[in-house]
Image (cartoon, rainbow, N blue to C red; front, side, top):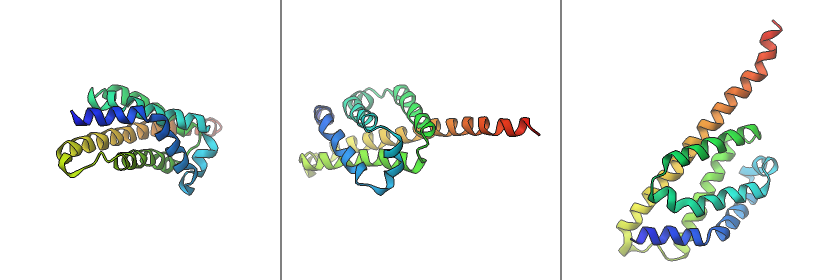
Length: 157
């Protein structure tokens, strides 16, 4: 299957792709707070993890693992004080780097359009789920932290 080979190629280039994401984020004004609040090695590790586990997540449809990881990521970024818009920007930048890599490697050719569209659909679904689950984690943490912050004010009334 062409898509399997493509996803495995992504995994073998995970370190290089993670470096590209780091470069893209460091050049982006949209990520200034993210980069000041999250250690660079943590961001690189997260992107490396995406690229190395992508085949597992796409091919075996391990949705519960994606859900767990990205709810955790959303929650962590909320606790770190990262604006939600910057979390979204970083995930989308990861997707853009991946797409650019596939184009650069010449893996998106017209004769393979059907297989490519299947992969594109799977990739889009993965990133959409990742953002959804990250948003859940972020919102849960935001509500919890807000409740904690308001509790002393309510107690003093």
